[in-house]
Length: 341
Image 1 (cartoon, one colour):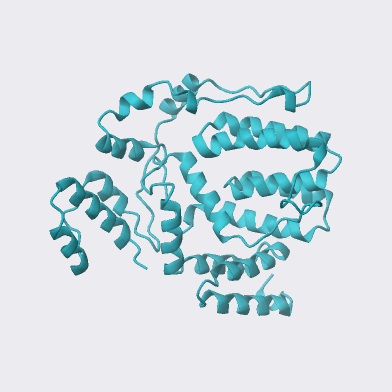
Image 2 (tube, rainbow, N blue to C red):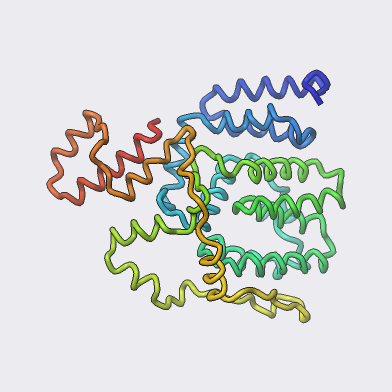
């Protein structure tokens, strides 16, 4: 469908979104208008690209980088940390609000008949989201699938699960769940709107401007381990030591149906063997965008010789007598100058 065939209100929404892009703090609202278009016309490439344009605002990138860095170092390339960045970014930028719970005490409570089951599934998902326990995500999917079968309120259940997946960066799973909801409840425009947003993030998660891009051959935690060894020479012994806080915790069977069976999963040893056989792939380097993520290579390698240090920073360096502090300050400059506000 060409632009002349879209209803007139689509052009008006696009014009409003473009105006909001230029306003301070208007980028999330601009994206929200584009999601409304994509909910009705998923193929509308102009609306899709306008979201990316809104997200490329320099101040927005700087603020979101700063917010994410409070809990996740930009050099941490473990795959579950990348998902955390995406999930947090979705939450930062989303204006979609779930429906109010009947008791008005909390937003979007799950149906009471399967609340315990969904809570158990959420706990399993958090083990992957927070600690990289992929088995938790696998078990969560099976628990949610059972919950959908058992509930008397499939509409709320599907919407609750879809939103949970989306706000934690599991965009493909969110889209799958929301498409099931759409088939069963095609008149739910709010769910359709959330589907459009999750779908956009699924298709564009590799180019969110403030999230470090990871190419083939990376994203396996290699950079994280290398920098951690620089920080703590004893890191290798700590990483290989048994840590009960990081062990996988099975679900409470009391909260699940009597006939529920845990899915079969591969052992960690077999997973490691498969990873070795498949190999790391071929890295093509960090992709270029509004942020030059190439600074992470310099950060890791300690290549700080060619930094163009601003005058204000030179005065700070003069007051630093500790070589370690000087290196850390130069590393901070690398990160800051990659995308100054």
